Image 1: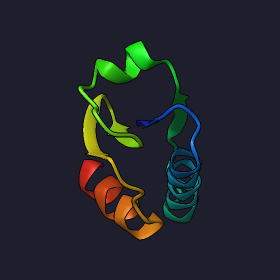
Image 2: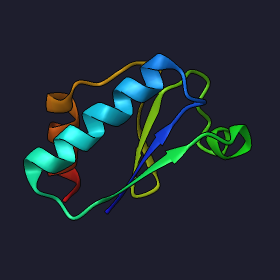
Image 3: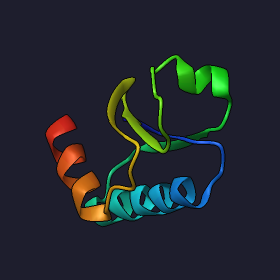
Length: 79
């Protein structure tokens, strides 16, 4: 499983990344977490507002910081 956090490095992007790390750790997943900061790469997902969360190439959320609990719910559905 590959999880990507889309964003240019703002506080919200960093918070989403931290929450994603926490969710992965708490679920004990063998997942790769990537930070995507290149605007051209972010635009490929048609994200107009960062941060964004992508799981295995599919955009799951954008424009807000998901809590670790929300991310865990998404991840358990994606398995």
